[in-house]
Image (cartoon, rainbow, N blue to C red; front, side, top):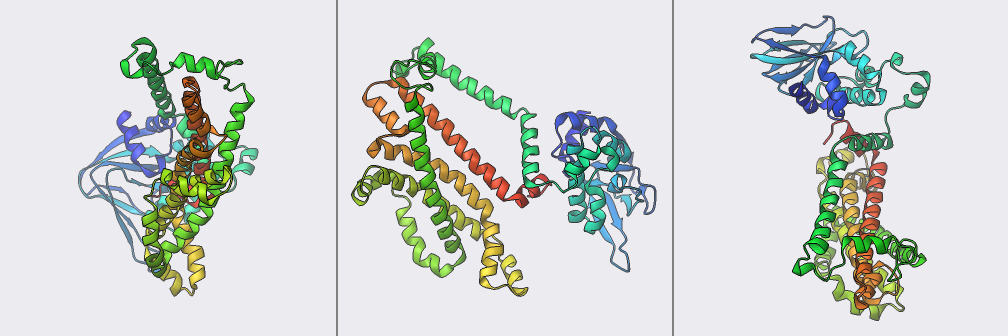
Length: 446
C-alpha cells in the first residue's frame, strides 16, 4: 500500500492529493505484471481502468483523425495512461504495447470517480490535472480534455454545481493549497521548531545560566512583561504605546515599500528590456547598491528636514535596490522567442512590453517584493535607531539605553511577527494577482 501511495504521489494527476485520500486511491489499485510485447489495450476497446507505470516502459500510440500523423509516446515509471477511463462513455483512443517486462498499477475509473463523490473539491483538482496532462503531453484537443476536467454532475448536489461550475480560480487553488498545507505535517514541524527555540532560550538563560547569556532576560520574564496589564517597564500588549509604535513603523514601511515598488519595478523593467538604457544606468546602480544603509544616515539627515522623512528614505533605499534588481533579472529570464513571436504576429514595442515582458517578469518581481519588504524592516530599524522618535526600532534602542532588557526582546518579537505578516501579505497578493501562475503550479506546471 505504501509503495502504491508513493507511486501515486509521483504521478501528475495525484500530486496535490492529501495522504488520506491518496491512501483510499491506493486501496483501489491492483498490481499487474506484463511481458515484453503484451498488448494492454487496443483502440476502440472498453475503457475501464487507468494505469500507472511502476517499472518498465509502454508504447502508447494514438492514430490521428483525418489523415493526421499518429501520436506516439513512451510511458515510463511514474507516467499515467488509460485516462479514457475517467471520461464519460469513452472508448480507448489508443493502443498500448509493453516494450519490455513492465509492472503496472491499475485503478478502475468508475471506482475512482465514486471515491471523489465524497470529496468533490479534490476530485475537481485531480480531474483538472488529468485534463492538463492530456492536452500538454498527448496533444489532445481541449474540447476532448474538457470532458475530463469536471466531475460528473451526479457526484455533487445542485448547490455545489452552481458554486463550482466555473474552472478553479487562482484564489480557489491558493486556498486549496493552504488547506493541503494545514493537513500536512509542515505546520506541526514549524510549531516544533518554535518550541525547540523557546526551550533553548529558557534553559540557556534561566536553568543553565550560561556565561554568555547571564545578562539576557529569561523567557518567563519577557512573557510576564509582554502580557502584563501593569508592565514594570511600561510596555506590553495592554498599553496604547505598544500599538502606537507598531502603527508608526508600519506606516513608514508602507510608504517606503510603495515608493520602492513603483520606482524599483519601473527601473528594473527598463533595465532588463533596454540594453542601451542598462549600459547608462546599471553601472551607477551597482556602485550605489552595496553602500550600507547606515552610511546614508548623515546624508539623509542633511537632505531631509524633520525626523520622519530621513527614516522613510533610509527604509526606501534597500527595498528599492532589491526590487529593481529582481525585476531586471525577471525580464532577462524571459525567452527572447516569445518577444520575436509577438513581433511576427504584428505587435509593436509597447504591446510586447505590456503583454510579454511585464507578465513574464512578475514571478521574479513578487519574489523581489518579498525580499524587499523584509529588507525594508531591516532598514527601518536602523533608521529609527538613529533619527526616529517612535517605532519599534526606537523602542529597541531606547530600551538598551535605559537598561530595560525585557523591552528589547518584546520589540524584537513584535518586529518579527509584523515583518512576517507583511511578507505573507505580499506573497498572498502575488498569488492572487498571478492567478495564471498559481493555476500552472497547482496543475503540475513548472
